[in-house]
Length: 588
Image (cartoon, rainbow, N blue to C red):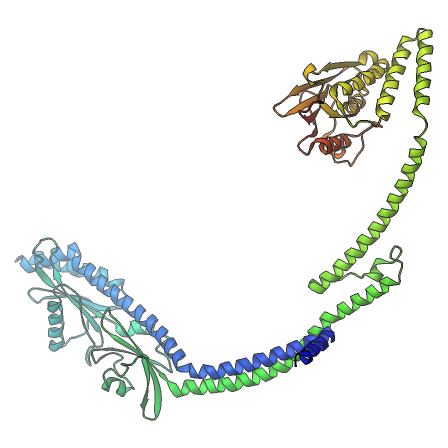
């Protein structure tokens, strides 16, 4: 069994990528379809709970918004009740015998009441009653029966200053908020009258419970078996049974007149009201069945469409790979160095992984061709170096002996200046050709400088003013050979040669905490900053024929680390200053 499975896996690995993709898409679609159909079946068993959760969400939102508005009504009654102007005018109406004063207080009382009511959307009317039973109203006051007025007054008195609610009846469709008005100015909190607000509950429900009050569903508000909203209800069973939803589920199915209704409820602790949401069960169930049939049809159509689309995608993926394989095979038998890049590695416009693979392959070919050319150039350079090495193998003693002969002839003929130049030149040649040491002392480097200056002084005479001001304590400091002499050569090229007046070149030095800094300064015209940056980057060569600035900087960094090297700057006062920074080390 195990061997058969392994053999099957081997067969799968060996089939083409296009077939693998087709197989993968087909299996994925089949599994997805099966899982989806099973999920639809499971959804039926969860359907009742889903409806309940939706209904509960609607009820929670609707009841919260409705009670939020009723809470605003309660805060409004408190604001009116505690208003200082209303309390003062009520006191006058209850105690004053002056008719003129009473008329003024009545007008002020009504005006103040109008100010509160005008900005309220859901308040139909507001009524303030004094201790003598006189009413002061604002808004669209509807006539109230004596029985309802007595109930309202009783509710207000029973509250003792807190808010009480009187539900709508057959004659008055408004919800009544009633409370006593008590004095806030005295500690006895005497009764000054009562406040009644007629609230348009229908309007509040229509605004904040639209999702519950739909063509399919209905919102009911019940308090202790009394229907508060709406005024009539189709589900008589719901009201007649009292509280039919006393179950752990929080919902039940109610049958009436051959129709089934899904009913859920939520109880409010704020007002003690119960909110019911009713939905016609059969109509929703029919919709789900229809949706299931549509889903099956859509799954079947999608399956065949996606399989066809998968084949197209598979071909679009494998075609570039097959082309890349063809190019690779052609590369095996072609001359890579002389082959056309567009032929062996055509450019790709794709931005996916296959396109990245093709571009990487193309870059690899370009890099290989570059390496071939680079290797060819290196071989040429090696041959040229070997040739120059052979040329340099002429015995240097022949040159030294020749210079020494010239030196003695000059002395014999009294040519002292020529003798000095020959001796200096011989020392420079001997030092520069010597390969014994790359690192020498600063004293030895300064000897090279002195001999170089000896030759240049003969050339420029008074135009060259050279000053060496290096402390004796730094003579034993180690420095790469031929560091200062090339800098002097640059100073002569860029300063002395271009000036008609005398040019001063100074070499100074100082010791810091962990390094030695040497300065080669001149008072020449300076160097163009852009040209200087190009020299330091190695993009341009200096006018001299010797070692460049970049070479000196790289040799110092190679010998002592990246924290050391040279820095070139143009002085504001004129001239150029080259700073050489080397570590504080001395030859033991």
